Structures are given as C-alpha cells and as structure tokens.
Amino acid sequence: MPENNLPPIFLPDKPATVSEWENFRRPELLGLFSDYVYGRTPSQLPEVSHELTPGKSRYPDIEHSVLTLTMKLGGKACAFRSDIYRPKPLSPILYSLSSKLPVIIMIDPFSSRFFRSRKAVYEYCPPDVITNAGFIAIRARVDEACPDKPGRRGLLGLYDGKSEELEMRNEECRIDNSRRSMGSGKQSEKNKSAIPHSSFLTPNSRWGAIGAWAFCVSRFIDYLLTRGDVDPARIAVCGHSRAGKTALWCGAQDTRVGAVISNNSGCSGAALARGKAGERIADITKRFPYWFCPRYAEFSGRENDLPVDQHQLLSLIAPRPLYIASASKDRWADPDAELLSVQLCGEAYALYETCRGDGLIDKLEANVTASPANNARTSTGLSMSPSPRQVGYHLRSGRHAVKLYDWERFLAFLNQKF
Ligand code: GTR
Image (cartoon, rainbow, N blue to C red):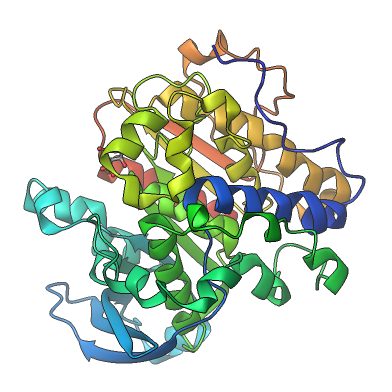
C-alpha cells in the first residue's frame, strides 16, 4: 500500500498550458467530485440578507460583532450566525494604512456538545491569537443553517424538490469571472460544456451536508466582499475534521478562497482513499451518509473503483496556498495517507510554476515535515513533488484536535504566503 492505481491528476498527459488545465481537466475533476463524493452544488443562489449586531467579546483589543446571514428560497428560509473578531485599529492613522485586512474563516459545524471543555472551544478558533497575527477571525456556525444530522432540514431542505436541483452544477461555473489567482480569465461557452454534468443528473448526486456547509462559507464570502475592511485577495478558509473536509471542498469550488487550511481531515478530506488505514468509505458513509451524495456509499469497500482520489481534490486548490495538518495519534484519519496526498498534489502546483515562470511564484520552500514512516510508502506510480512551494504540512504529536500549536503553524504559513 498505497496501490499503483491512483487516478492521475492530469489525463491523458500533462497539460501544455495552465488554461488547458483550468478549462478542461480541472472542471472535469470538479464534476467527478460533485457526482461521486460531495454532491452537486446548486447553481441558483438564494435570496440573502444580513444583520450585523455587536458581540460580547471579553478582549479589549478586539471588536466583536455577530453576523446573521439568512438565505431564502421558494418560501423557505434558514440562517446561520458568524462571530467576527476584528483587531481594533491602534490609531486612526495606522488604521488607514492597513484598512484592508486578511481574513480567516474557521468553519464550525460542531454543536457545543462536540467540544469537551471551554479550552477546546477556545482553541478551535482563538480570537486573540488570530487577530494578534493581523487577521480578522471568523467563526462561521454553519450547522445552524444545515444541522449536522440525518434528514434534509435547513439549507438542504431549501433546495430539495426544486427543479433547480436538476440544474445543479459547480460553483466553478459561475465564479469563473473572479479567477483572481487562476490566471487565465474567463471561460468560453465551449469550455463550460467540458464539465461532465449532463450524464449524471440523478438523485444519486444530490448534495449533502459538506456541500451545504461549503455553500454557506461561499455566501459568507459574498458578504465579506461587500466590506471595505477586507482584502479580497487574502481570504483563507480553515476547518478541522469534518470542517477540514468542508474547507477543501469549498476551496476547490470557490476560487475566491485565497488559501485553504485543513486540519486532521482524514477520510474524504486530505487522506487518500486507496489503501487508507483507519476510517474507510464504508465507515464514514455508514455513520454520516448525509455528509455526501448518495452515490459515494456505493464505493464502500471499493475504493479502487472510485473515479477520483483525494490528492486530486487538493490539486484543485492550486496555485493557491494550501496547508494540511495531521496528528500522530489520529490513526482513524491516517496521517501517512494525508501526507501522501500532499506530496502527490504537487504536480498541479508545479504546472503553475513551470507555466508562469519564476516571477509570479514566491521562492519560499514549503513546510513539509515528512513522517519517517511515509518515506517507505511512496511507490504510487504517480509523479511526486515533495515540496510544492505553496503547500505546507505538519505532523503534530498527539490526538485529533486543533491546538494552539496548530494555529501557530497556520498563521506563520499564511503570513508567509499572503
Ligand atoms: C469522525 C469522522 C471523521 C471526522 C470526525 C469529525 O467520527 O468519522 O471522518 O470527520 O468525526 O468531524 O470530528
């Protein structure tokens, strides 16, 4: 293990240009992840309204507010709240110098029962640590719009039974104009049709909770872009575990996401499915079938037949900064399988480096801390790029969680890349 039959990032050959990748193979992979794993994201946007109210932050140097974002469609509505922690300007002069701030959106789909202590709640999204590093910190409570439970309440219910469901397709199609970092500008009508949606318009590719949470984050980004104090080029999306999976899927679809951080995301997140130890597709779709599209469960025990694997999901984030973190005792997630994906996705990053030339790529090496165990496991038959410059990785000792150590590494990485 891992097997030699990992699906390749490039098919049939390495594209000759970035635009060939962006207009053909990249949308094809997005379509496959929609149809086989996370389900299709609806193309119709809901009617959205916002309400911003003052929060109750106990930090004197942080301005805390709460945004309630409400989505309405076909007479139904759902809403979620996000805490917004913004560093208070030291003085009006300093404020005007740095009025556009970078943002970290920490996706929080967890009910309060998930966190075992107040410390764990804090460490999941520590407002003081993040704002001290110069970022606006957001804790997006997306489970309020789409509860982490079986059943199609909230956002999923908004779209169920609507004719729009049959028109579902990736957000990629409609965000193509905002390809800030993708280089090639607009897609032509011809290239849009390269997305293989039409052959899979069945309930089997109906979206699940991960898709819905990612959609909530994109609606939150719509809001952020209306604010004068946010730098649109420096919006990072971050998440742990199920939210780490969501961060990757959100970043893959929505190219306005400027960087992705995925902590301990394991099965159906950063970890390769083929040959994975710990949790497998059968386990995750038995416990959490509603996170995915129904078709995904058909690959229980048949990982080798799945037309995609998770290194391809990471490749969809290229060339934007990507950080994956593992924990040594998180055997259920399988740190080795997470690292292997990181190494394999380098091929897509390398494409941007070779096609764009040195001028547009920063020279800093990635923080890849290879786990010794992994080195013996690299015969994948695919080409490896051990240190893609825009990709960082660390293996923390300890269990499945987000710790302050992880935040130190995330913030250092983002400060280097943004
Ligand atoms: C586990 C699940 C993992 C991970 C985790 C979490 O039980 O099987 O894939 O998502 O939950 O989100 O906490």
